[in-house]
Length: 129
Image (tube, rainbow, N blue to C red; front, top):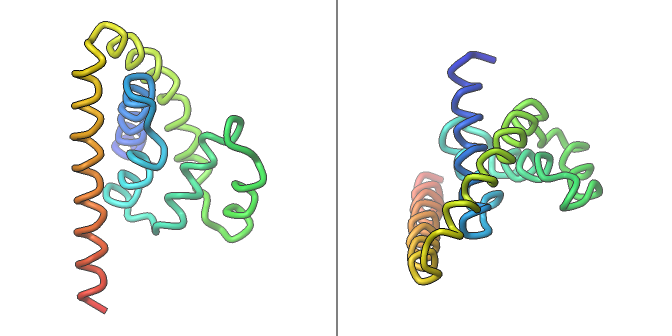
């Protein structure tokens, strides 16, 4: 694993943690697409890795299913999980200082952006088959 890879994983974890603390999102909305776009993980491997880093609060049984099929990158999950904790702290601090309406607009805008990216990449993938 290169230093650049570790830095990107840390940034994903911090940003996901900030979003989690800020508007209550992070795993599936940010981490899964980031692992797909930055590291070329498959949809299933990205989902399995995202579940791995959130293993304690989500549940070990779902992660075990992904792990058994080879769809968990343990090192990515560990690095992102550590950075996620730090980001969550700062994201919640920021959110609590802003108007709930501002947070709602930021959340909705981010969700629209992620939805567009996922739909567009899926559409392009279907066209190339």
